[in-house]
Image 1 (tube, rainbow, N blue to C red):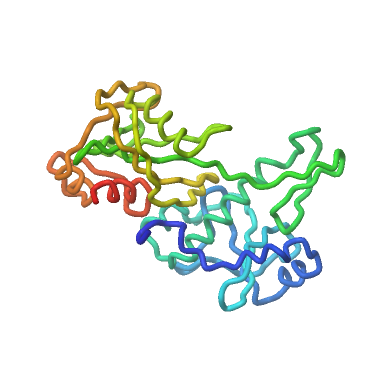
Image 2 (cartoon, rainbow, N blue to C red):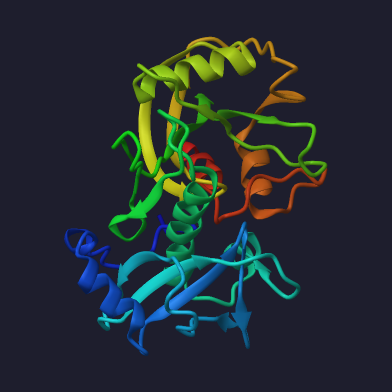
Amino acid sequence: MSGLAFVSSLIDRDANNRGKLDYVTALRRDSTTCVVQIAGDQVRMEDKALYTANDAPDTEAVYLGLTPDCKAWFARSIAPEIGLTAIRSLMIEGPLPEDQVSLLAQARSVLHWHGSHGFCAKCGQPSQMMDAGYRRHCPTCQTDHFPRTDPVVIMAVRDGQRVLLGRQAAWPQGMFSALAGFMEPGETIEQAVAREVLEEAGIRVGPISYVTSQPWPFPASLMIGMIAEAASTKIVIDPAELETARWFERHDLEQMLKGTHPEGLFASRPQAVAHAVVTAALK
């Protein structure tokens, strides 16, 4: 959907060639190859553009793929330093084109996985990066490990012309958003939506429909945007999850989405899938 961050990647991930060591090595050492440098949630910039010089070509890096101009892109981790730029700020304020912001979502998520999975989860011994960054192999017990993506359901609950939104205490004053939660093993998307809404706000839901999805690289989630039709309306919040929740009428929601609500209330930014599901619920 227009306006969403991280959904406009133009990269050909070139998955069939990741395991070809000579192929990947040649790309990594090509002077025209672009290499982004990431430290946690921050990236190195230069003159309001991504820093992509192919320096330190023998360091470990993740192969992201090929852009339409057939240029290879990699990403590597660097130590935190002064002058790096937060990926969140690039998402909101620019100045990067949308396809490069989307590429950063891929890079940040995979690098984060490597940073937190250096040891085999089966035997505890050090593992090795393989397939240009899309597998880790344990030479001790021969177990392979693969990057993970954590699915999250995020839903606007609708009751006629009203929509249920909640807020967490840590959020900026006046901000309300769609309810959300991680899916659990053995659940369908619809079951996760129903469970999360009941747990967080005490609302039972009926029909559930899909809106859109969004990669969210903080650190590696897939946000699955849904609309759920309310089957009950009495709110009973779980204070461990929410500070408050309330039903909002259409005119309030329209003002909150535009940032013009007279009480200073506002919804999530247009770059986030929460904004998209609330907008879809009003149609």
